[in-house]
Image (cartoon, rainbow, N blue to C red):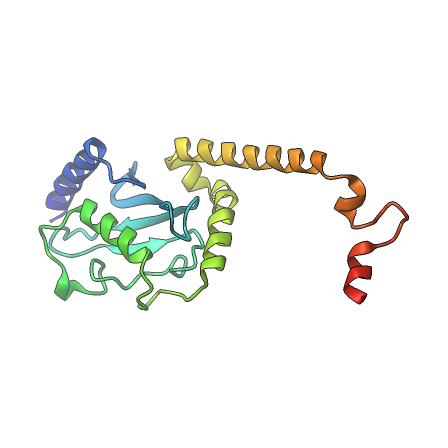
Length: 199
């Protein structure tokens, strides 16, 4: 069984390397073909835009005859972190699993389900505003994740560039705003923010 799973997963990975899924990156752990890590990049016009969501697929030795476990480690507002997710393409539902499915359709299914609001075991409820905040925070979160940085060095570098750009924009904005306004104090030394609230 293990030999079948290994051969199948190697074929799946080669196929994805040639025809990658938009906004999804994936790679097997170097010393364990049964554990794949992925990053779903938030697609435009969704609350996840700009976010990087790291997780993993854990395939059984019986793959493709049994489905994988699916986890997400980056806080996202849709799924609990580091928890087996209950999806029709995961090991929670072996009765709906199709042995012809490969890693590609699994990742596509996860990407699609992430943009839905259907509740399931392992999902969480959050507002679009909360999801956008988590998308912004995902950059720094993933850069603190050693495995993310080791397995996805190009994405890690992209995240570092994003942080640098944010810092540059922040400094440019501060340079445009007079210190008195930035601190909320007018030229007479009056705290105009609090005084305006009391009027």
